[in-house]
Amino acid sequence: MEQKGVTVWFTGMSGAGKTALARPLEEELRRRGLKVERLDGDIVRQSLTRDLGFSKEDRDKNIERVTFVAKLLTRNGVAVLCSFISPYRAVRAQVAQEVGNFVEVYCYASLDTLVARDVKGLYKKALAGEIENFTGISDPYEAPENPDVMVDSGTETIEESLAKVLAKLEELGYVPPRPEAEAAPYTDDEEAEIEARLEALGYL
Image 1 (tube, rainbow, N blue to C red):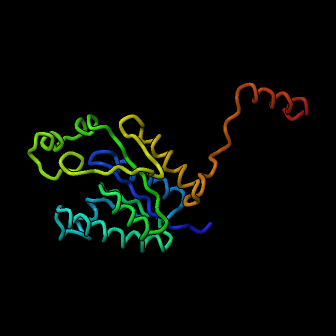
Image 2: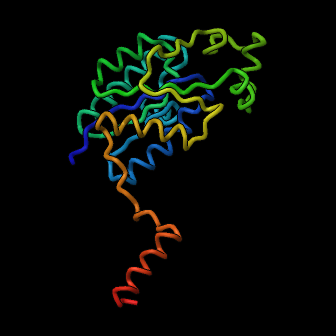
Image 3: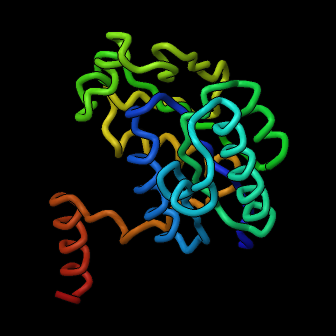
């Protein structure tokens, strides 16, 4: 089966588990023999957008460049995994329109969970008014109204969330079903029955 390119776009607030989910998805898709590229904020800002800051205008430019790369790779049969806060619905809708084969994954976690995970204490500072334009606190985060997949990283395991994303990608025809591993082992009763049949036939 020829690989069908797709962009899987992980959106959600800082610390909601976007990259944490994209990484095992990348590994699983590679195991299934697919071509995969993963783009996230840290990777992209080290190279493609190192000249941009964090103003709304620069963030929009950041997403514009990522969209161009994702569109190019998707068109060439690659599964592209993009992990960006991308807080505005209109911008995500534009990305979806540009790319075409697009699956939106909303990574949710409660604010309490996000604060508890935040080792740098940025959420606490933002809540105290010490950081301006912090997404989800002093700047808006517009949650997807109808994402293709929604995961709750505060209540689900990575494995559970990964299974939901893979199921959707399989359903949409972007990812082949995982080849069945070895046949399920027989139960003790089944083994005993098989042995009895073989013995009756003179094989044992």
